[in-house]
Length: 515
Image (cartoon, rainbow, N blue to C red; front, side, top):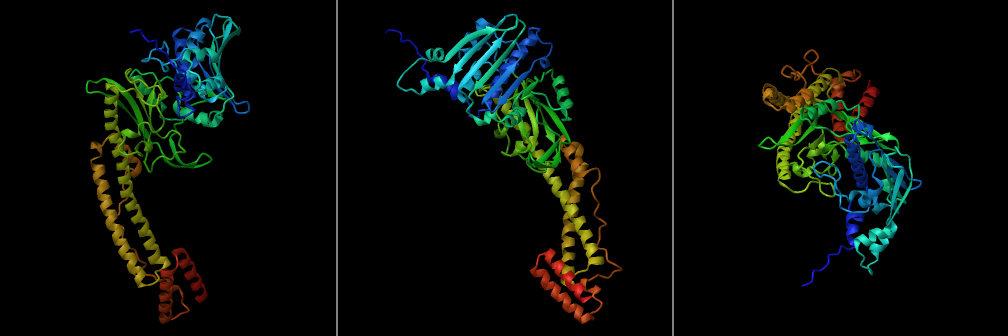
């Protein structure tokens, strides 16, 4: 039987380029990781002393519908431009070392523009190489179902290569998207916010726990790759802060703060380190609102985020769990390899082990915010009783009760609240006594929520003015005792009909009229 020649149809180009990503912003991540890899190589080749010598600059121009992503790293030799930039999925990069290694991400922009242009120059060559992909022509060919072109022929048809004169010492790579059709890609503010969590950028100087994270990395001999990345001249930093807000970006208020962070390691039973990470410690008053860009526990490889904020949700006991925290998990094992969409890892034994160990860690974090909720609830019972006792004292000595029925209700309420407060105080005392046995994170939460001393309530009693309860009608001296009792009954009716604020206002007006 004759051997049948294998052919690759044009539709494969659509799968690997036009139909690759659900979120259009992913293309920035793809171009950034390619630029970061070349900056790494520039350091290895001695062009740069450190990663900080390199830079990646993104320019977004909504008026001209143009996007440019530039890096000042190695560039590509002229004779390698076409073999590298026209071929698909033939990357020579090391998947255990490089951030981008499949050779398909650079074509992601084809889905969102009319022309995708690569411009590059290699140090020592006096040439600027230009490769243009005609996206409109590509889409027309793919959508023409009457023809059955092979993928390689289509690529040759839609690409155009040329060269220009360039300075000999120039070295760079630039991606240009012309005729951008996607508005999300042209929103420079949204792109900036997206990159604060996705891109391999430094922590902001205002994030006070940066040193603690860096120290843990040094302890593990782990380098957190950080590159100077700019969006329209504004440098991108991770969006972590020590404050937690609610509201929206134009009107937000602080509702909690990060008191500390805890670092940890994810190791197998044979002490192989798969990953390490950190998480925030706050009062955990509520799920962190979405106005906090950095909320949730994030997964990272090469300091580039894997997936989005919900990637690790499936490993938590409840879906909202990761959103109580700021935090990151840095994967270390070279066998944890991102999939082609970079929204998770390829299935293998290291991933299975990682998920099992992360689940165990997340179980601890689940207990942590429930612990915080418990002690805050106990403290609230004490605070509620102390506040009510002051209100009772004020009522009994100055404001006055409407009648005996109201006074009796206050006494009963006082006793109920006191019983709850005493029980709460006993619970908090137990927690404090065994605090040394609690995980360190729980100790820190207790310290911040409760403080060094619980408020003592044992001696809080009902205080009266000379032993005599004051009634609201006592101040109406123009009336005799019988009439004051009648007014007191009227006030009681008012209390049952109106809201407390309206009832108080009306009773005060009546008192003024009768006094």
